[in-house]
Structure formats: C-alpha cells, structure tokens
Amino acid sequence: MFLGQNYTPPDPNEIIAYSMDFVDQLSAGENIISASARLEVISGPDTNPNAALAASTNYNGTMVTQLVGPLVAGTKYRLTESVITDLGQRIELWSELDCQAPT
Image 1 (cartoon, one colour):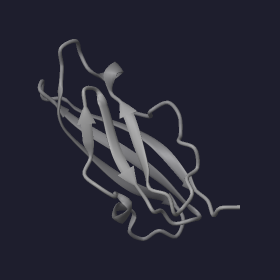
Image 2 (spheres, rainbow, N blue to C red):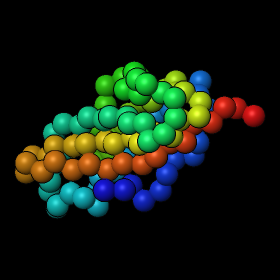
Image 3 (cartoon, rainbow, N blue to C red):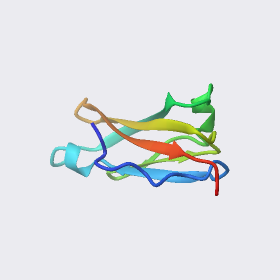
Image 4 (cartoon, rainbow, N blue to C red):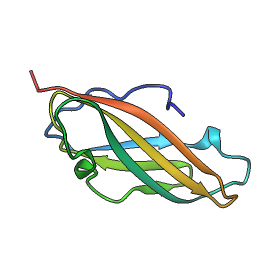
C-alpha cells in the first residue's frame, strides 16, 4: 500500500532514516513483532539498491524505520517496509525516493 506521499529527494551522499507509521493498518490491540525493508530501482543506473540499506530495520510501537544511503544519483527507488503482526498479518507500505545529484 502506498504510504500516501513520496519522500523529499535525497542527496546521494546522505544516510537518512525513513520512517513509516503502520497505525492505520493495525487492528486495535494488534502489535508488530518483526519488520524488514527492501529497496528497488524503478529507473536509473543503480545495480545493487539493497546495498544502500544501511542497517537493520527497527520498529517501535507502530513506527518502522530504515536507514538508507548513500544512493546513486539519477536513480528513482521504491522503499518498501514490511511488518508481521502478532495476529499473523503481513503488511507493506511503500514510498518513492528520487535521488538527484546535488546542485
């Protein structure tokens, strides 16, 4: 499911924490028990996008955070964060990152 907005274009040399809030996807009393992320190329020259997943995916309550970077300038990415809940649901949210060279 689309997060609802794309992220501000990152500088290729930055490492940024991208957070997604799953509160609207969870039932009352439902809890996240694990989280993961993947980074895919929509267009552009990056041939190894998952190398930019800078650390393990973290979650706290309904918020899931992934450190991403550095990225390849001229590449448009889709960041997907996935969770498993204590009720057995697998839920995914995604947004796009359009990495441009700094001006």
